[in-house]
Image (tube, rainbow, N blue to C red; front, side):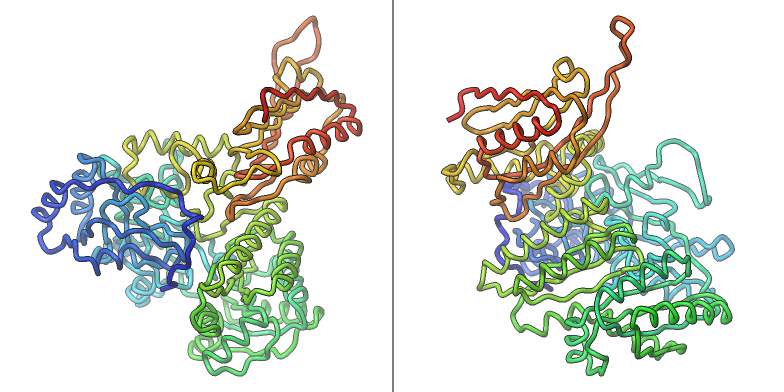
Length: 623
């Protein structure tokens, strides 16, 4: 596992909840030796592949049925103690860490394939079945399950994190391939969502609500999945390129031409060098694409020929083809071993992995600028990506004895996420939010959407026992908590300005701003500044962004910033036969920033002159 660095400044500061001895006694009575409080077992279930560190859970229960899970959750609910589902521990964002203490439920023994319906192309499994186990058990039917996140993860864990992987460009993600679930709710009740039917319009789509919920709404115990006929023809190829840009441009053109490619993976020259040393391969140490084609033999040949022609136009060369399973396995070893090869390339290092995803047309814009920043930083890194669907991963290799390397990596990650969001992408394509991306979620989805998520969480889990502390803090954002903790400890200096709390809200009214409450509020610890805005014409998004950002400086490693929501609201009321009024609401997320308040105000005054806005700065008791 990826041993922890010292990322305590990234974790929500949350005290461990007490676990009453009566609960441990009840669990031991109910489960006997399947309930363990041994330290080595608890520590094993208190770690994943992330670089985060947290105290282990108070106990681990090895469930063997849905009824076992229901019993654990019901007992925990009585004592208001958290429960954390555990699969194989392969998550990368701290999903299974017991940040508030509690009981870990190990689902690994729930590993039965319950039903194979080959005629309907569906299969139902328990949550502890791994993807490799599933494919081994159904291969005799001529069917396979295509979702491949790399690790041999459990189907329950893959559902909980909405995983995808190398085949997503053709077969989709877990979102598209989960038909139904069995879930244990926060009260211990067992419910079913979805059916084996290919479509349904019956009520709310609870299956999609649970897929990607990271264990915060319930424990998934059974999953019904789509499976696919194994293609008649399969071929794989490696192609080297003179630059990352050439490889990316090739990928974009392949996807935009509608070539039904099954996999297309980018591996940069750093990764190739590391893989060659690790796996004793002799690949050309240049950026390469690893591709796979599925279909009929004739169709596969046509696809391969089309892609080869496109690649050649962009300087692709040294094509190496593989049509037998053994040859394909050898080629794919370069991709699947990239992470471990990178770790071994710098003995004693730790890796931090990014997970941004952008629309395919914006892939080159996002990726090339990010590569330039990583090169300029001086950090050791590798780059791999499921570039067919716009998803890629930087792996920053850090020396735990050099904390500044961690800070540099986090800064690169912030810049990468900000760039992806500006390009209408996402902060996480497949790893999930977990602990590391909570602030990015607010930036991406907007405060209103995250508050709706919290409302759902409160409704379904009123005592906050289902994997608490993940995705978001239930009552307020992690950055808000971190800001107050730093303020209490004196860790933030206010010598250059004031501390801005979680959100900087900009409300711009077009036509009738004053009646719509059009004003800018900076919520400082020492006082409140108001800038009243009356606009004669709309403000361009980038102008507004620059005006606020020009004099801000992030001090928290996970603090992101940017415009996170723009919407128009219409006032349907008419006054004296006038047309309905419109207001443009723009929300900026700026967690834990040092801001020169007067400079921000000055920039808004300049913005006002450019846009015809009338600005009035009002200072209420600021220090």
